[in-house]
Structure formats: structure tokens, C-alpha cells
Length: 230
Image 1 (spheres, helix red, strand yellow):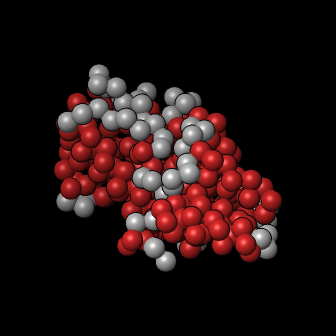
Image 2 (cartoon, rainbow, N blue to C red):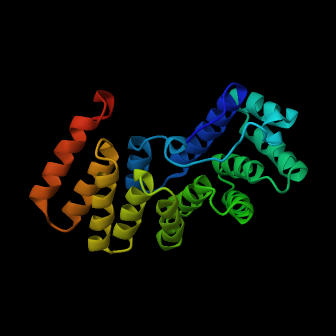
């Protein structure tokens, strides 16, 4: 994901941190939590289309949201984001920000509505598909999550996160062979990402392929930072 420079970078980083932190806290499934921790940050693998001329980023409300987040006041930030979408109803970025902040405080219906509005305005806003799928997955709605991750890999075929989540959701739905194929694709597009190999090990193990699982796990352990090794 490419961000404009200066204050926009800080602001977006704050929003993304709030989103990921909220998802990790809300996660009820251990394997999803495992993947969230070991995958690259979402902003590195899915695009947020925010150009230098985007008026949302120059609006004082956006700056106030950044300040609220810096003080860990997510409720205040969400309230401000609602004002931002009221001021810019046709801005996919404004709705995406609202979705991220609503998700961080577990207001899932509001978050989903905001992300849906995002893609209604900009159908190729891939970050919104990532978050819609994640919202469904953290609630255990794996079948509902699949179409969003499928759209994500269509838009971002070289990003591992979509393939990994497709694999994980497929496994939860009892589609072990499909899970394996998605996991293999993740390792092809991102051979240096440990989470892709961890998911492959999981998928192989689910099918009873013990030796293949061992090899995939060994590859993952070599790629993991020391503090994340298990």
C-alpha cells in the first residue's frame, strides 16, 4: 500500500493500528489470531487509494481523529469519523476510515456498512474487501467471508493475505483440499512470508500429510523473527 507523505502517513498508520488491534482483541478463533499476528500488516498488501489532492486528508476533522487515536480515545475518533462521512458522503476514503474505527470498537454492523459504502463508491478499493472478509471471519462467518477474500485476491493476486485467509476459511468449512490449494498459492506469491508457510503446514496436517506439514513448518520457522518462533 502506498501512502502520501507527511501527516497523511501518520494518520493512516494510526487508523490501521486501531483496526488491527481491534480485530486481534475481537478474534475468537485461535488460528485467525495466529495469522493476523504473523502476516504482513494489511496496509502493506492492499491498496487504499488516497491521492495528494484528497480533501478528506486536509480536513481538520481528520487531524482531530489522529489526535484522538494518539490518546487512545477510539470512541471519540469514531464519532469524528461519522462527521467526516457526513461531510464527504461520496468519499470512499472517509467511509473506509469510519469502517476501520467502528471495527476497532467492535461495532461490526456499522463497520460493515461503512466498508460496503466504500466499495459502492469505489469497487476496486481492495482494503475494504480485506476488512469486510476479516469482519466476517472474526465472527465465525467463514462462508460469508469467502467472497470478500476472493475479490481481494482478484484485485491483489500477489498479496499473500487473501490466499491465506481463503485457505483458513476453507478449512473451517471442511474443504480441506481447497484449503491446501489456497495455502500453496500463498507460498507461491509470497515465499518469504512465514504465515503462508504456517498455513500450508496447517492445511497439509489437516489432510494427514505429516511429512509435508513438517517441511512447511520448518520453512516458516526459518522466516519468523526470533520473538515469534514457536
